[in-house]
Amino acid sequence: MKTKPILLSFFFFLTAAIAIGQDREIYVHGEFPKIAKNHKMLAILPFKAVVKLRPKEMEKMTPEQMENLQRNEGLAVQSAMESYFLKRKEQHEIEVEFQSTTTTNALLAKNEIHAGNIDQYTPQELAKILEVDAVIGGLFFTDKPMSEGASLALGLLVGFYGSTNSGKCTININNGTDGVLLWKYEKTLSRSLGSDTNTIINTMMRKASRQLPYITE
Image 1 (tube, one colour):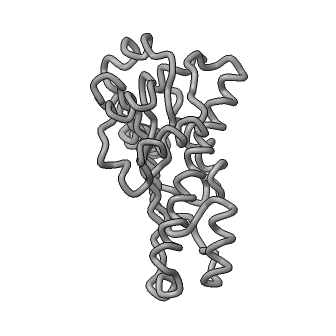
Image 2 (spheres, rainbow, N blue to C red):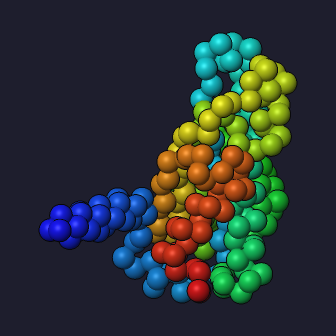
């Protein structure tokens, strides 16, 4: 009879430990809410995508094809992020504005900034070029393409679509004036998150947005 309270205590301890571990996935700057009050326009950057293929699959692809595959995957994550935030805005759950990713990418292209060199620019440099108050970007690392177009392209090239969606996604928000990291969310990808870019981003952000000052709910 005494073992039940012990088991319950262990269960609550384990649950708390898991929750603490999950909290560590998110970093929030101590003054983010204060800084966010002055933000009116944000830009979502193309994500840096790394698709880790098997050596035999890599042999069937040219460097140009691999570069295009990863660039398109990064654009797919950017698009999924935009869709998520615009949906929240339509539901009146978020107050800041988001620069159209079409505008963002056009301005970057005019300044000869692309997936291959965007990490050579500081967040404040990018924010100045885009004329926004903060920038959202990050890294998408996966063992197969998540976007439908990229997955199909890979299948046509090497006859392989990938069996898992393991990897990691990191999302950063940096202040535009000084480049300070305001928010960071890092999540290991798993099948429970979904099998396509939009589903993965939506699932991730639903949990992470609870600690995002821009969300009003």
